[in-house]
Image 1: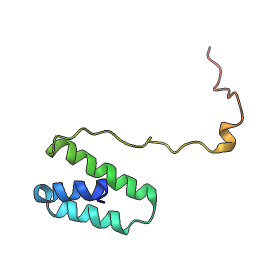
Image 2: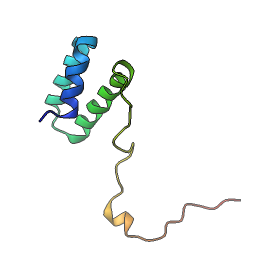
Image 3: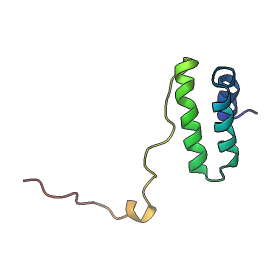
Image 4: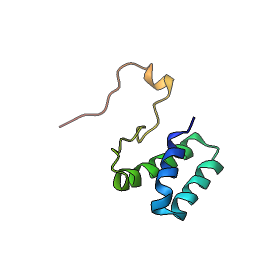
Length: 81
């Protein structure tokens, strides 16, 4: 089964050539899941432009909070005057 990144690279390669090849090499070389996700999002932008596919980022810009933080209960944000 082909991953979303592979599919986008295959479709974008005739349009963008070496740029897509470089992104694919970065994707393969990166062992960090966050780095792979960055490359995937980078591929989504030209796909939206050239392939007329909707761009919907699949991850939040910030990592989820730690479990200990979530279990604290109410959080005071500050005082407004």
